Length: 473
Image 1 (cartoon, rainbow, N blue to C red):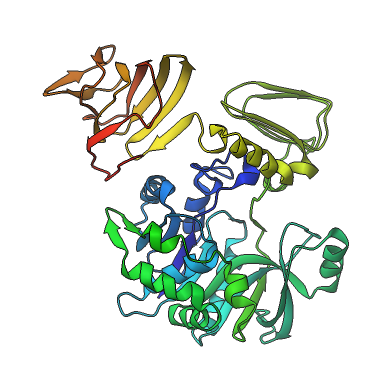
Image 2 (image 1 turned 90 degrees about the horizontal axis):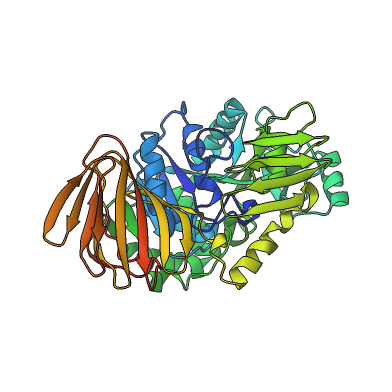
């Protein structure tokens, strides 16, 4: 049995403003109609002996992660929630321990949730090649045969070739991201491949190597798994136990130290979409080598990536630029400077700007809401409730709300009463009144909410009952 382990943490700061802390790149459809997470699972179709995936994600992303898996009809083996990010070594340790709970010892196929792989057949062939060695308790990493001198990736130097038809080889060493001259030498030598961050090993084998080389990670992971609790679709870990685990990559913790490492090099059409330049490289280009998405007009524009989500972008006389517009932010950068976008995100965080954390459209397990307008003492939102879903029973101390149904129907609880609202009907929720919104219909419920009061923050809420087990979000 092969159990995919999908690493779906991370915040994707280099793709701001598309990717935000609470809506990161792995949950966005930035490459095709599916999200990065969904693509990671779907590209495994056709592999034999494939079990249900274990997904490791941030606690804040739990409902979107579960919903996206349901949308592609995937029932996960487990969704492990990390209270805080701790890099890949603890995530893999937790997944391996979880995979062995039923006294099985499956092969784990570890895949980051934010990669593009165009050559699926070559990817499957590499997995099959690695499986033979993983069954013998080797630790497999998949190397990407480079086609350019990339400075944004780590590299693996290939050692002794073990099998000529698959290219399986020992690992001589891992090397950090090189400068351009060094990257050119790596490419010309033919002895290096990009470090993809994808792995394959037996669960017991990686646990044994973690115990030997990173006991300060493995021991506390065993403790937090033993104290974890199942909550709806999720396996929750204690913050107190997890926050003190060392943050370390599996490369540093194990792969650079083990004598059991084997690399399987392959050509994959692979990209980790770590920047807007990567989106330009992988995107469909027009006759001027531009990647254009959304409402965009250009004149004398070349080799640029331009994406509009809500407004017309008009660009004139630029070359090798990135312009990205969302409803609350615009990014403009030369393509060769987009790695510095993370410095803008740091400034946003330093100034407590919510644009680093959320979009104007915020997703919830029951649907979503989008802020349309906000001023002192009032706020207007567009609320969408999925069929059959309902919000928590709640009240607010500082604001009243007026709801108008635009489409669909709503059951509204106000105090001890329930009313049915249809299209073009409205109701008023006075300050301090316990209330709940529910969609009893078969189509999404769309309504406009007007809030008024002295304080309009999302933390002005008292929940009495919530079907999703939430307390704060």
